[in-house]
Image (cartoon, rainbow, N blue to C red; front, side, top):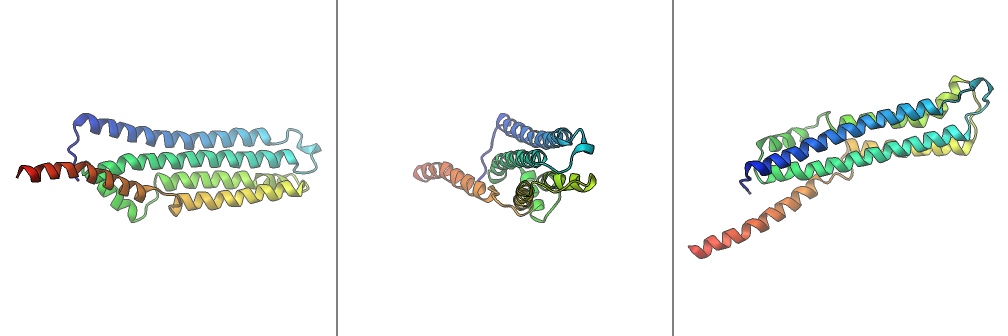
Amino acid sequence: MKRNLDAEDKRKIHSEINQLVNQRFLLATAAVTVFAVISAWSIPKDVANTHSVGAFICAVSFLLTLILFVLFLLNHLLANVLRTYSSYLRIADESKWEQDWKEYRSAGYLAYTKAIATLFLVLGIVSSVFPFALGFIYSLTFEPATGLWLTGGIGVTYAIFVSGMGFFHWFDQEEVIDQRWQGILAKIQTPDCDIEKKAE
């Protein structure tokens, strides 16, 4: 399905791809920053007079895990947008690199999506375990029980979804994107074929 794009079209597509890759990196950096700031802020200032983990720390842990998941979800959506551009170049036969890169990715590798998923997975698990770790370190009673159960529950849910989306291709739209581009490019090329047949 060769499209013979001009140099300006190729430049625009490659520029968009580079911006999306950069945005994904910035989101991962933002996740680390948010995690560090909120974790430091949530540590009790007067630990000596603190007797239990407390609802506040549970709530902060819950909120931090939720924020991390939103950032990861946005990262995942940007990955699908990135695939929209790279799939077009591959299916339109405008980039041998994208064709080879998909073949390479199909064999399994640890880069980009999986590396980012690993980072978010570690941050989310530490965020969820934070109230429990604080309790063990400072010998605090594990109360309120409801808050700790909720914190643990969202942590497990977070880990399942981040692992599924990052390592097992949950909600991965690449095949759907490929099919859509194939259908669009086939429709675009059909009229040209009909005109050529009539001319003959």
